Length: 176
Image 1 (cartoon, helix red, strand yellow):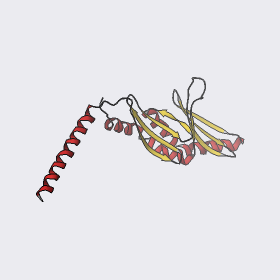
Image 2 (tube, rainbow, N blue to C red; image 1 turned 120 degrees about the vertical axis):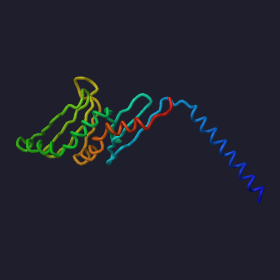
Image 3 (cartoon, helix red, strand yellow; image 1 turned 180 degrees about the horizontal axis):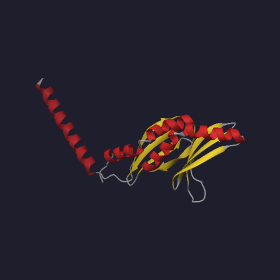
Image 4 (cartoon, rainbow, N blue to C red; image 1 turned 90 degrees about the horizontal axis):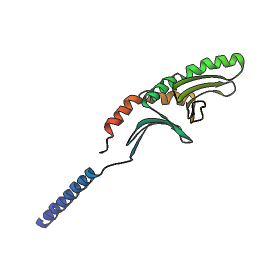
């Protein structure tokens, strides 16, 4: 009986020593070139993600088929306000489209390199696109097309982008 207790005590001492050594080793490691991603919401193939790297904090709006659109937290919140009103905007465009039987569009610039475009087509219905400019004259960058339901659902979480990014920034702090 005494032998088992002694062996258990020795084993506990070895495990404790190994744990302390591993913790000390972890404290001495300097992390470089790291990336943290938090998929805040995913609806179908569309996701809104917060990304923190060793030198940046940003949000991304993407789907599995296309490269994501990188937004600052403030831009994401502004886009969210526009996406929340997608159905209302498309109703206005639908009325205009029905009068002329042509496609109706409305573009809203969010930032120098980001735009939200509402489109209503008589035969296909409406959608909204979030576009990212890569050159001053053209929207030749990434475009993410969303249905009304996806746009409004994603907007609910995107509206809190600034607060969510502040939380990630405060909680994710690898040692430098």
